[in-house]
Amino acid sequence: MLDAENPLAFLEEIGVPTEQSLHADQTFSYRLPIYVGDRLTFNARVVDIFQRKGGLLTFVIQDVEVLNQDNQLVAEIRRTLVVKQKALPSA
Amino acid sequence: MTNPSLQIEQSFPPITRTTLALYAGASGDINPVHIDLDAARAAGFDDVFAQGMLVMAYMARAITGSVPPHCLRSFTSRFAAITHLGDVLTCSGSGGQLYEENGERRVAIDLQMKNQHGEVKLVGRAVCAFGQGS
Image 1 (cartoon, chains in turn blue, green):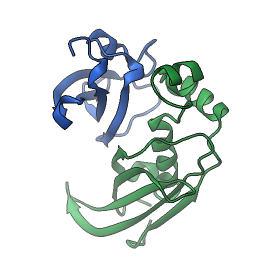
Image 2 (image 1 turned 45 degrees about the vertical axis):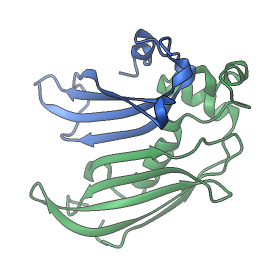
Image 3 (image 1 turned 180 degrees about the horizontal axis):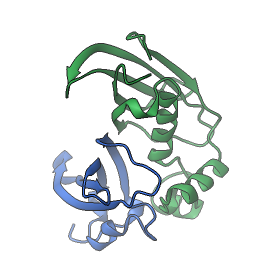
């Protein structure tokens, strides 16, 4: 996924300037070994968005499942990004 | 890995602008606040600062220095504070009680990454399988 030209493009697509976002937490779960020659597919989706501190902070949770060429789940990734509310265009 | 009372302790070189530039290129994290002083100031920071994932990567290196990588089942971390230029990071951690999960014995290692002033930058937990030919 980090091979992407802009790994944070999804933030820009939902209107968040990358400079205003901070990484809150990150989790990797390793399900199966990954071998040289494997072809991996990363399926990412935003699973939750919520606000804290009276709306000053917006949290965006993204889940990524990583599948190999045999469609086996080899890893799961979750990251939480926090965005300062003033950065949101609708604020 | 045969000792459940696993202890981890590792220090890393001071964070420099070069470190941040190299990690930006290597990781693909192109957020300019980590490498461009103008962008950092425009976003309200005094200077560039370390990518969170760089600090997590140092923590991962400390873990895999003590635990064979194939034993690692999960690795999670919370970014507690910003890591600044010049910070000297030290990772320390210790394993807890063994428990059974998915038909194997596992241990959770709780870790902290602190700078030279004892400020906690990253709080992490790694779950490792025990007795995997290690």
